[in-house]
Length: 295
Length: 285
Image (cartoon, rainbow over all chains, first blue to last red; front, side, top):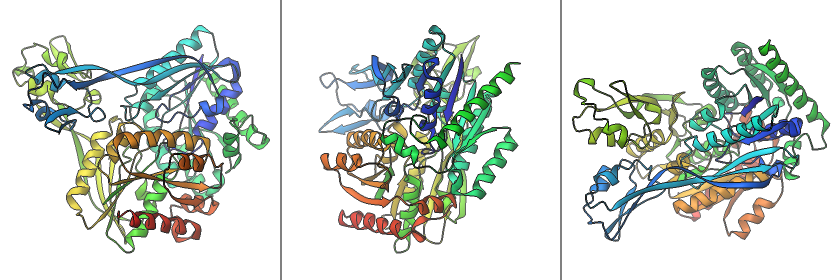
């Protein structure tokens, strides 16, 4: 089983559309994991039917029992997260600000503060419209995206892929360079970096690739909207060459990305054959690189 | 007044709107643009600016002092983030897991874990012909953005008074970095695109902004590219639509050149005027 993670650093480059197209390409031979749990969108294209839904607990939250509290304010003195407000003559926890360190509960003399597990989201095991297993999740409002829910999604998808003896795991990764993207990358065999020829596209590519490099995972790049700026496109290609990143495909700016999305289709399902060839070529190149690595 | 520009989905035009709006306002007012997307700060790429100063930013991490330690390992038990482990007569600290809550340090009976600064990123203050900017930039390998976002905001509040309009370019998503960026602003502008992804992530962002209790409105970017579902949703939810930025390849090309689109694309400038008129009517400017 080979695990391919699609990431982008910058949002809006076409990461999810491309990951979903790969999922269409491998069909029932793949397990799909949507690790962009903060803004999960892949299900809008793959239309999964949910078979299993579970709450995900991560960390703790504090609660002050007003009957036990003696209003000493000791809790607010030690809280480094400004999570304890004095409202209407009593101390209350702001659940969005509370990071669950438990310091307040430890110093509260009347033991009026209890720590309880926090639900940080839900995760789902589903069947995509192509009949492939899909694992996805929804992070709760204002929850901490520590990467733990991402790790859970990946773990469940991997277990499924191994149990069902699938050949591929296609992962829609998280944006940015922080914990969620680090969790998305762990255990990957190949990373697809999706970018666009804009100053921020290149800037974010450079930063996220610095993270990928730390893991030593082979990577390839798809330049989307390539015709927006030739000079910037050439600069990106220069960066790829210098860093030993394979260029998997260049795709010109194409409204079919949006049109397919509106029709709830992946770009491989949508009736624009000009998009099929670059995606297929990119995937073949990945297969080739993985095979070479094996030998 | 502080106005945040945020979105659930990435790539919907947060940085485009914040850099253009800040500079447009800067033609007639004092404006500071704070780039709080510290994982991928981009606003400076689109503005011809001079750097006034850059300094390191730190987070506070406990350092284990072996001579003072009695090996009671209470710190390990206290830490809710598993950032400390006790192994072979040593206490190991994992800085990436630490939330700087100080509990281990202050509850240690022998003061064997003093809190000490560790570099986590950089803060840059720059200036263009029209505006000031403050950028937080997280180091590669650092995983926790919230503390740097908070420090960037503190810098802005310290150096810029009430006579300055403060525009916050927030990180994407709906988790704690986004909440940290918007929690003390007067108004949140949510920017989205009229597509299924845009709508889905807008709904999540609206849920978050409502939970934090902020006034907000929506700017639709690339209006005309997808469908009307975002408009229908905003109408049904009685959410103000502040402006519609028309879909125009010229905007994308200006962005790709690293230029501010309002200077060359008339439709974009019109939309900015709508945003300014809306903000004035709400008493935000």
